[in-house]
Length: 102
Length: 240
Image (cartoon, chains in turn green, red):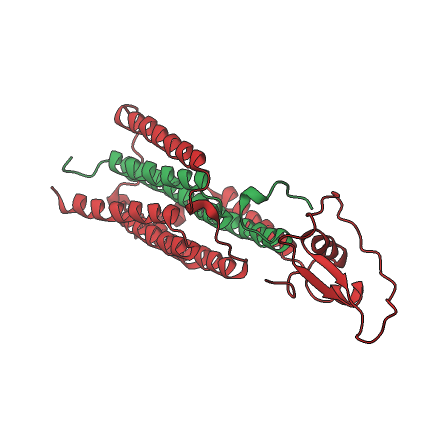
């Protein structure tokens, strides 16, 4: 392939998403799991923007913008939960956490 | 091979290597730095894809705001050396890796056999240049066709702010005591030389009735009275 095609971006996106997924499945530190979720959201953005580039449309870019906004909200809430978790249970190991209530 | 493709391979290779670093690094701070590297490379790929505004938004929001937030939380929470890189849970790691490989194979098959292509849109590079660039084009589209979603996004961010304030609120004394009673051993001491014990105040029991077994790794909290102890955060004075 001597020219950039959508498949390039789809493979990049798939690789990033799967690396994030393996991280979520295998790591135990809740902060690293959180970073892997961000990685997966970012991989989806690559797909959206790649398709927007292929189709000469802006819809994909706007959708990626909304994904970024939702990711920011998710980061705030997720990190708030991590803080509350570490204050109450004194751990960041998700294997130690079995319930969200006290 | 076109120079564009070479640049893409360079950026994509660094992005994927950095993403692998996020998963493989033992120190969470190294993971965060790898994540920054991955995000910046992906932002550069957005520029290749003619999405200049999103590249800038990616750097500002992700590497600017979210990573700073993650690093702050990393510094604030107690870091433990989790045993995950000392041979713990080999089954889970194998299953995660195999699931990843399976999904990669499925997605690769889907990409390589893709035949459906939608109708091309009207925002050709010339049309985008005619309205003044990527930012102007996104602004026109966003504030005409996507007016309601952008308002909903504002509502979402407001809700997230309120939720964060709720999660970060100071805890009630009863909650602190319940946590301390579950995690630590509380010893009600008395002033030196005074042999008469002060009446032991009743500590509220944790609601779920689960207490960590005494001894072992429980740390000891010394307090003269239950009320005095609660003036300090339960975990502040008992850090190992």
